[in-house]
Length: 256
Image (cartoon, rainbow, N blue to C red; front, side):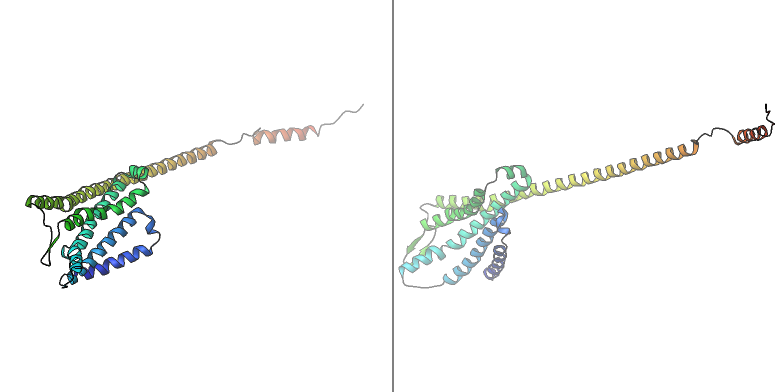
């Protein structure tokens, strides 16, 4: 049931990512495509392992193939451990991208994306496939897995696998996403503070502009009211001058 649901879900997600051509150019989407492909394979191989586990045959070669691939759970474990390492790669890339954006922009190269895709597969092969195949054996037609020479070697291997895939990844996830959330909250607080400062500055500028306009308007009105053009003489003086001129015209003029 888990394998079937996981296969369908991861299949649809992988198909959607592959159909979006623009998304494949981004580094994070390349990592997500690789991660989805690993999860899809783990679900498919889980179904194959359950089906083939009860398969009986008399051929020694077929028994060895079934032993190495399915009895040891190699194909499921390899992609499962690779998937865990793939999540670590995505987390580290997001951590550097968000918390240290300048370093990410200046030092990130395309080959790092290829390395982030290949390293999870290398982890699965080195941590499980090689030890599982190296310690597998066939006794009386039965597949025996992880037959280490000494119990101490088996204990050391088990402890190493536990630390690498069940202790270290959660610690990386907690630290990285704690810093990412803290950085995002800090950026939001700074943005809100800048918006408040900008808003207060805009209000102060508007108030200053309004005050200056009022002063200019008041000064102009005062000047218009108290500054009038001066006349050359009063109306009384003008009328007296015209009266004297008319009387002078009536005087007799002497003739020789």
